[in-house]
Length: 254
Image 1 (tube, helix red, strand yellow):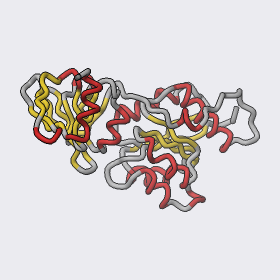
Image 2 (cartoon, rainbow, N blue to C red):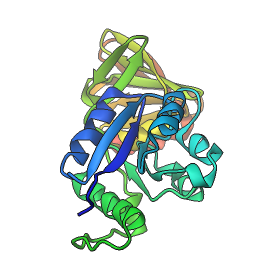
Image 3 (tube, helix red, strand yellow):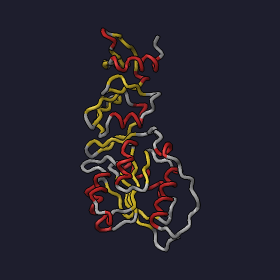
């Protein structure tokens, strides 16, 4: 055990994500959280003034991404870094900037323990720690479905349960989430949302549209193989020809 705790900074624009990391790290008295930041600008200031040993950082944040932020730092100034994100597709880029580990949200404590072990070995190579089994690459990239999705909306953050979402529409690097009376734009790609949402509950019906299967009331086949999907609240969505067969399979259509 080191005489002084290792100094760590958490960087994530979502309050709930920072809370989850703080709770996961509280099991380790040899780590001290010296700052929590919401974006790369705040993180840059914290690194300059606090010189932390370890950094837990999200990938997708407003402004500069976590990967671009670390890549822009001189190697001598880079803390030992663990990325914590909902998007598995950025793992190779993260390791290209010498990340220690890459965790997927929501955080699994056993998997987090592995990341801490790797940080300890990098920062304190002469100290012997209890063995923690290391998963293979397939486990690192395994999809994990979110129980809650937090969405920033100005000064507010909406906490949304996936089962309350009716449908989603892609708009570049954002998705429009429709959940009952709530209409909110979330900074995420549709591909990223596909990795967070259970495919047993959400069906892709168009290149830009996901729908909660529990909200589907009717399907109207149309000319040339496409169709129209009617939700229980009366919303009408296009079912493209490309995704019609998948819809037939999931919904048990003959």
